[in-house]
Image (cartoon, rainbow, N blue to C red; front, side):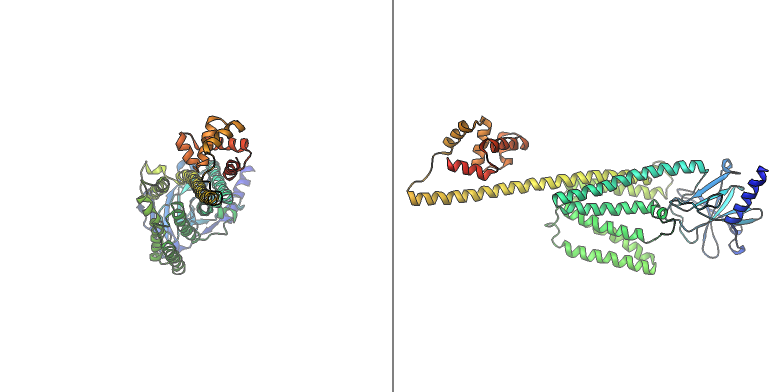
Length: 462
């Protein structure tokens, strides 16, 4: 009785998911040849120009339930056919063996492997980068869960990086942070689409073959603008805004024409613009490689990403043990390193600029004070016939004893009186900048002042 129920269920399942193939599309009459490359397949083309794949199922998987999937967003529209007696039947996708719908990241086919041969109709798609995953459901679910965990960790890191840079932008107000946040968001969307997450959450309804092209175009534009501001290339590229306007317009025009016409010439031309626009800043970064540490940061990180991506592309065409290590997970690892390195580089860049601005403000305050002091001295000389008040050293000695200053604090105070900046004080006494600020902080407390201006006022009052 048990076997009768199983046979009935299987027959109902076959009836629900299998559809006989039309005679004019019968692949058994085609002549298949070996397509050499990274993954070798038997391929053939029918009269309508469709590409067919003839594959074989491992003997260990025959007479059992099997899962077939092409884990790529480039292969979503294809048909699977199996032998059923003397006929070939089409297997319905995205349903389990009981005919219930399945929500997956890529189209999936469950079937009973009654025969060792299967056929795939890839329609008119090229087979570059094709990889067919055939496994039993148990191993397939384990691999899917492992990939899901790895992807989730990467997505979490990217989201944290975006939030981190947005917060830093709100704190420092530097445009580099929000530009890098936008760049990370575009990269996140590329991986999210390529990993089939849009396909998964929309239950296979949202598929846009041009979405990736637009996101790559945005990545090219944002990465160039980010590099321009990150390296402060305003003086090196004085007409950058005009160049950027022309390149951005050219990119969007070429991509739009390709989408309307589907002519590959415009797709290739778009790829040229994608690389040409960032190359403008990369060229200047190379010229600045020795003199600017941030140019080295940019070249090494972006160069590493480009090298890994090149190996990843070659891995789809060349059968090599070395290239087999360069998969999507390797690109994620390289992207993770790039996120960490560039984020810290931006922080150090902004802190350095803030320290320089602080030094400029201190120097400006010193010049303004000296001019004010000269004006007051001239005024006193004209009105009272005197030239100079008591010497500053005598005043410092008096303040040292009155306020209980240490020898070092008195020396730092003397430097402040002479309008030396924090950096100049650090270099004069060969101490760190933080130690200098520590002594100045003690002076503020002991003299009951809040800034350098009030220190000078204390000296004038004495």
